[in-house]
Image 1: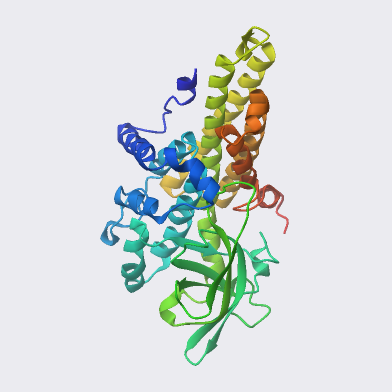
Image 2 (image 1 turned 90 degrees about the vertical axis):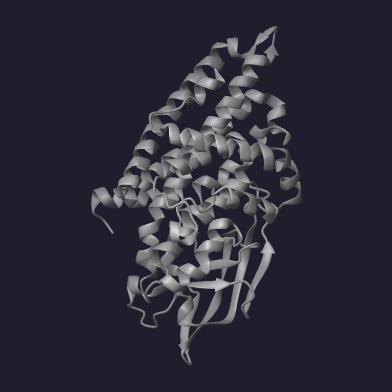
Length: 392
């Protein structure tokens, strides 16, 4: 039965399956036996990033002239995300996703040729770890409320502010920072710009490594910028074009989360099917009870219906046709489905489901963030409603 849950869909072809096999081999060699220790230590060693970079898993979408894989086919990323979920390597997957699906697209889409030569090769190989700093202590999904500023002074930019909940924040060698550059209060969408801050710059510091409910070994941090002086070489894209840049890249980020949610739900279901088939209660396998059968049928159906929508969104992304509303639908629906499925699956494990030695317990903690980061479920619904109701 478990094999049926992982049966390949029409989304993939032989090349994707060959790639999937290499990802699975990498996980078996470098990751699977270390997951529990990493979670206990609260950290993933940089050596794993370098090993993944050697395999080409981090720079899949980086143009070949910068040492990347040069593929725009997101199905390779889908296969990779699914294998990480299957192996319960969710913390590492989150860190890689921030690099591959968020930071790298900003850099190769908006960097000058000189900036690209400087940053992309090391990001593609995992020698550099990247982060993006949008969220602030007083602003979550409200990007217009960003108060971090970059002001002109003596031919340079002076960056001041604080960011929080920054994925890869502790280990990041390069941080894409969203800052307010316009002094005019009516500047609107032209008020923000993107900057690249590098490790070792004067005035750039990290606060505490945040103690999270889940994703225990994925580093999340507070970042502080105190009179960080930046040249124009650290301006990413055009001045005043930060918000449009963010809006143009949020669909990929949200689709990445939706793909991860479907993969996580599928992994939880596969573990649960194995468990209820083997575990006996009142003299028979749990799978023999009608309640179990109905619950599994409901969850499999909900997953497959959601997966069909998300797979279609992946194909739209490949064609350059994925719009923000489609991505918002995929993100909120898939993550809420993921949360429901993992919760129901844990129930079948009974007390064992609450033990961290079981992947389902770790998944329960890891899953909760997915309806929050990348834009909350409520924000996704607002975006969708506005597209239909034409309200502001």
